[in-house]
Length: 298
Length: 226
Image (cartoon, rainbow over all chains, first blue to last red; front, side, top):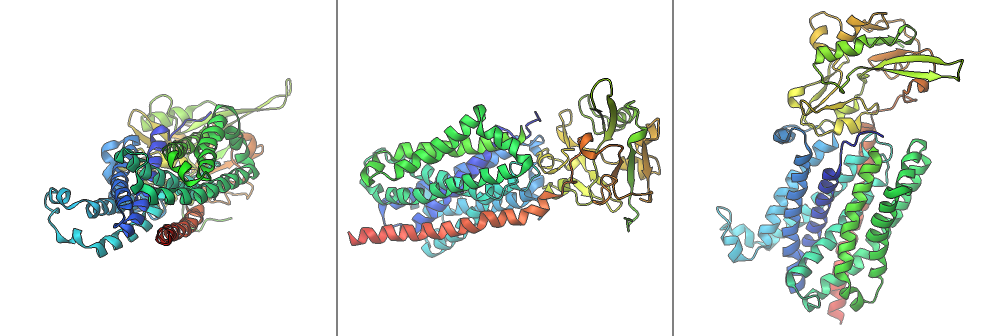
């Protein structure tokens, strides 16, 4: 058995960054429909969530460094050959965009309380908010893909798989969409809140193709890993034993198949089970990253 | 194959190694590494069945690759490829992220818990820049490790690492696999694969984003129809 260099802290970091990117995209989509009270709630909550989870993800990344107080060295260098260096720069840009996007979403009384920048008139300009949301959506895509490329561009046989970056992206999307909706549902404190009708309908219809694609990508990932002779042994690791149980039961069963089955239920039935669907998709995303991270290194 | 540049090399002659571990000890003393961290390591292998068992040894360290994956992966520029072919580790810049460990196809870099940074063989650049031999070569009792400051050695293509221009060449007695060396010599996957990995991730991601935007518009339209 080899030493595990990247453990649970990195799995949490990758997961939080993925959630942030997905939540931002949900919020950016909601910014096109600010007039609808349901979308407005989802937009504001997801914008908050994107910033908080991004801060948590970056915090975990720093926490994993052995020389934590040298983290700022990352911002003094740009190595275009290093996925980590590219990713850190995109994360920094994404952080600024998340903050701006949140300020745009804030109700005016909240915004006015912000020191220095709170009084700027730019925050009332919907057109600029639209541009920030749109540009941020593309940066969010890069950030989500980065968490996959970071692993895939290494020499670890199990991770060196072309299906890994898209799989991690779609998992991040599912986690972000569900996390944003879940947080909004929790904050409204009314499960049957009719204002959330449209966002929940969107969640149901978007979760379905996302999970189907995730399952297809997982299949592709396993097949490609199996045909590569060195990786065959590692694939065996995630197929059997306690890690296999987490992979099949946790990441695939709970994180993909169960929410997919739920998404095919009738609209009203789905809305009643939306919280559960969100939770299982959300947790499944973490299990997926954790198992992939450990199975690659053991 | 001849090297165009005057690059520094260490050649290991497997038939001369007696597993005395002098190179290991010299390396530890030179680099002041704690027990458990071995930048140079002598490993032994066995072949055959009793009573016809053959034992053979290899003294391994960083290969100082021509295109080092560790230097490509390092986000803070702590690993630097020098013009003399060696890959130097700037300890004061290392943040201890561990990405070089994941990137290195030979799994050479190791964490030094005493310093909280990664460590790897630096080819004793602090010594060779002053005209001295690398510590491991200087202390090798049987001349199994030989230093070639100008990269001129009687090279044979079957020597492990020569075709790939590694700066640690192995003249082996048995097959490379039997010494636990990866065959073929692995490439720098960080630079080789990265572009394709980005494309594999970004193309479906952008496509899906457009699908989501359309989906959100459609739901809005459906509501209007109702």
